[in-house]
Amino acid sequence: MKRKIAAIFAADIAGYSRLVAEDEEETLRRLASYREFIDDFIAKANGRIFNTAGDAVLAEFPSAVDAVRCAIDIQESLRTRNMAYPPSRQMSFRIGITIGDVVERDGDLLGDGVNIAARLEGLAEVGGICVSRAVHEQVANKLSVQFADIGAQEVKNIPTPVHAYMVAMRREDGTYSTPKVKKVAKAGSAPNWMWPLVVGVVSVVAIGVGGFLYFTKLETATGPSTAAATAPSSTVTPSPTPTMAAKSPMPMPTQNAAATPAPMPSPPTASSGKLPADAVPFIGERLRSYLANEYSAAGDYKAFALNIGGFSGSALNQPNEEAARNAALDQCQKRADAAQSPRRCELYAVGNNVVYTHGGPPMPPKPWVRHDTMTERAFVTKDFPMLRDQAKVRVENMYVPAAKSRSIALGPGGQYFMVLGASSVDETTRRSLESCGAIAGVACMIVAVDDVFVVPIPTLLRVTGFFHAASNSSIVADARDDVVRKLGEGMGWNAVAVGSAGRPGLGLKAADEQTAVNTALADCVKHDSDCHVIAIGPFTVGPTN
Image (cartoon, rainbow, N blue to C red; front, top):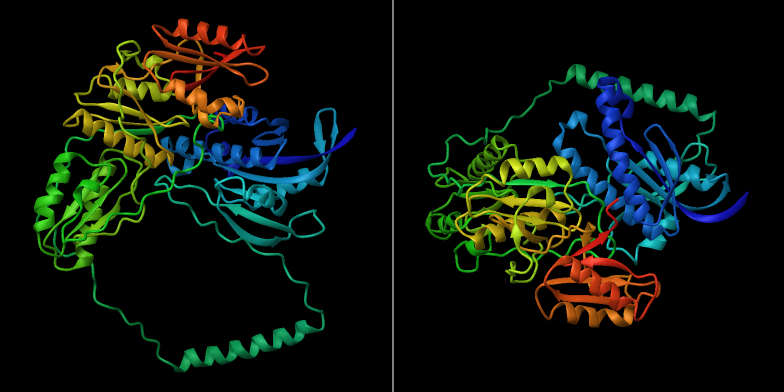
């Protein structure tokens, strides 16, 4: 046996027994599927699973940063995966993480570190993460993560309270949840001699209250109803928006891809009595035109609502502001529900004033599409990177037969969003990037427009994420700027290889994928050994199996 310090990760499924009781076969099948990609996440974050039991997973990591980053990736991927199921059948994990001294025996880990991680997992919210103070101190200044201090917690079989923190999880709209404060450690028990006194006081109070209620008439005041009494006199039908959003449960990219949400721009405000329609995200140009003209010109009371899937609702000439708010939200939500959109509607404007608090979604720099005849090829659903089979079936059934203009945006963690039947390529690419970015929390990439893949799609190796040379830890730091510069100089197929010392080899402006790969490997062996390809085109890549 040997002792060591490790970051311990404990996870299990909330309500697992109920899920099994309701449908054992389906639950076990989904558990196996979820475990497959959870295990993949853990392995890619340098973790090691040392014990499993039923729905529980115990893993060790060399650092708290790796453990917390992995936990966030798992929870965000699971959250989107669960959207395909009704709330009663969603399979959500709780995760606890601590740093502790553990004993390794035959590959298993034992000790207080393991026990505390399991207790922290029990404190976590459904779909949430709870960490010890030691983990918080290690991670707070290294990851863009928000925490809520829940204080000292008294947990089973641990003699002293454990000071714990909740990780604030990112919602679908890019904002962060506020973790609920758990019950703090209990104070010492009252001395036995106090109980008669307490009972006596409570009895006196109860008698007094009972007499007061008996002799006093209670009245309940009810205010006037404020429900909207009339339907909106003017409504808007958005341009055709048979959109589809999903998040593929593929392994999240390595730290080379953006893993934390980009700061959201401040929401626009109406400065001249007119709604700034050109800044409204997720919607088509016809609806923007309506907002700039008919809506802006209309008198109060009016409101406009939308969701990140592109559905909207508008109400004009209402009897009061609350009626306008309710009518716009109701119309938007009905449209979203009819299309089975999982995204909730929110108010964007009341009158001509923007009340939407999330700002604009993260967007990549322009141009959003760069056409290159050397790398473009016909769209084939089976070759779409980073999507599981279920998502590919949806793309095949919805995207392939849809009318132009259409596009699909892809996020670095396998998120995707498609906009179909838009009025122009500019509109479809803007909207798919906006919605995908809002879901992912980081800028997405246009992968397909109409019938064509508009970025190089690797087929020789498996796509694992987005490639960012400037932050890729596989490349030695003093060579990254040069790699960034050379990759940006031209079109065609590009590939990057690295060796054991992190020295890069490049294959640039090649006519085909194989040539780029061969050239990158040949260039790498001039400077390094044990070379392997890490990127093809805009993607990080790994072995096919």
